[in-house]
Amino acid sequence: MTTVLAVCEQRDGALRKVSSEVVTGARRIADALGGGAEVEALVLGSGPASGADQLGTFGADRVVTLTAAGFGTYAPEGYARAVVDRAKAGAVVVVCAASAQGKDLAPRIAAKLATGLAADVTDVVVEGGALMAIRPVYAGKALLKVKLTGKPAVLSLRPNVFTPVPRPKAGAAQTVAVTIPAGRVTVKGIKAAEAGALDVAEAPIVISGGRGLKEPANFKILEDLAHAFGGRAAVGASRAVVDAGWRPHADQVGQTGKTVSPTLYIAIGISGAIQHLAGMRTSKVIVAINKDKDAPIFKVADYGVVGDLFEIVPALISEIGKLRG
Amino acid sequence: MKIAVCIKRVADSETRVKTAGDGKSLDDAGVKFILNPYDEFAVEEALQRKEKAGAGEVVVLALGGAAAQETIRTALAMGADRGILLQTDTVPADGFVTAQAIAAELKGGGWDLVLFGKMAIDDYNSQVGPMVAELLDLPCVTAVAHLTIEGGTATAEREIEGAVEVVQCSLPAVITADKGINEPRYPALKGIMAAKKKPLEVKPVSLSGGAIEVLAMLPPPARKEGKIVGEGAAAIPALVKLLREEAKVL
Ligand SMILES: Cc1cc2nc3c(=O)[nH]c(=O)nc-3n(C[C@H](O)[C@H](O)[C@H](O)COP(=O)(O)OP(=O)(O)OC[C@H]3O[C@@H](n4cnc5c(N)ncnc54)[C@H](O)[C@@H]3O)c2cc1C
Ligand SMILES: Nc1ncnc2c1ncn2[C@@H]1O[C@H](COP(=O)(O)O)[C@@H](O)[C@H]1O
Image (cartoon, rainbow over all chains, first blue to last red; front, side, top):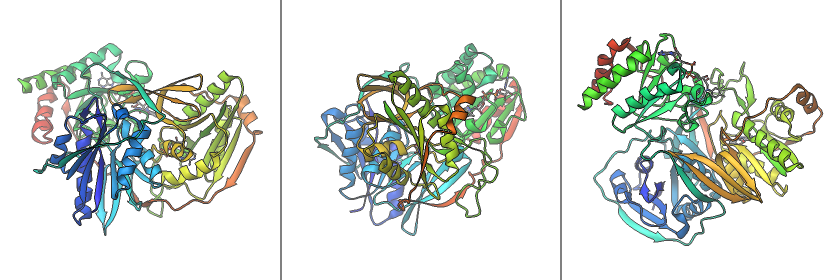
């Protein structure tokens, strides 16, 4: 039977959102390949992960949880071995996320399978039975259309691009215990950011500030704006303000920071340098607030407001506040 | 400390991107090429590790056309001891093909560390480092923003979504460098002069076919023509209305 493997991700025993995107992408590939290809969602952990039972809803025909003692936190070598063993049982395609974990794991999987990896893919198509992927290169200034000829084909999907599509079907869940050592590379700990803080790479709304904010303390108004969106927004930053030490590198959006693809991206006091655009150009809707009407950010923005951010942002906060009642 | 650093010659991100006549590669007329910024971090890390150990060798390795010699000279000017160019006609789109050639060259070299950038800013592949690690059967930590090495054990910090992961492995190991790991030095004039006399070995290699075939290089989809909603705070009610009713994102 033709199987498309969807490599899911969990943290602290809970499935991460990107997993439903991976399953959605895998489903799309399986349907396009035809011939009754099935999607097997693969979860790795030290025990069952909460949320795994939902994966059927996004198109998994089977949800397989591979458990091993050392799999509680990400175990690069052990995870790669486990996925590859499963892939060798007849997968034609292996789909990962291009998340922090997936970017580490997918190349290991591809290398163990002695094949190539199409990384950070934003679209997939099947033409004449062959799997093709679209992936941004040159800081998003061009797209490559590539044909995957590997057996199996391995790809990683850019987070937030493959919007999960619920389907009315429950996948049969199965837990398989495996005896695979965690490997030589071990996670000693995770230094979590502020509890409940959303990461810019994952937030549905990203509000980024740049040098136009004038000083670090002024980021408070962006945090207030994020707050007005009720926990769905994260605050990002341009490199200029990260280099100045105003904001942590983890918040930087762009070529040397994170690639984000939120539903709504609001750039405030950011000029829109090409390296910044590289990190946010695939956002669904872009809003720019800038006092310079010729700022390059307006060239990619769907909606622009020209003027002083210190006047505009408070007005926006109160208008969003009204919406939420 | 014997350290290998893999470096790539890439188009500067400021560059204007135009598709070549073949419809699938970069037209490099007028393009400025640089040492991949993440590889600068890797070179710097190697130099600091060698300086700290008080002895050792830093070897830089690039796969690409003859022009990549220039990139190797840049790393030599920073302070690397010698360079190797695996000379090819083209740089493969399939990172595994590159990884195979690099691994074949590095195999059995007795390296304590093999360093990479976390990603090449041209192809955005983020894969050659961990693939070489697999081929050499070495432990590997990717996208390292902070690194300490003590008594043969590497402790690395890497950014993950909303947190920092602390990862450990023993040496010899493969590490890929992220921003934050160090501040790369600029080559001094003395270094640039010295680099001219440092050994640079050119080895022609032939590559396997690979599993990723480039069909086309296309411009990114033009974003729908945007609009300036208005000026100042007065434009906000209209903006929010558009976000709700037209864009449907609120
Ligand atoms: C190799 C390399 C990698 C890079 N990687 C990144 C990256 O990952 N991310 C990134 O962001 N950059 C990156 N850069 C830097 C990038 O080129 C720009 O320098 C940077 O993005 C500029 O940041 P900015 O927009 O905050 O600042 P500026 O360019 O100074 O823009 C500030 C903007 O604020 C506006 N403004 C000022 N006051 C107000 C006000 N009161 N109200 C409204 N608007 C106001 C101004 O009109 C201006 O447009 C990289 C550069 C290089 C060379
Ligand atoms: N052609 C190459 N020659 C030497 N090193 C390379 C080459 N391509 C990639 N690398 C190394 O692998 C890293 C990741 O590249 P990539 O997987 O292409 O994003 C780079 O930062 C380099 O350290």
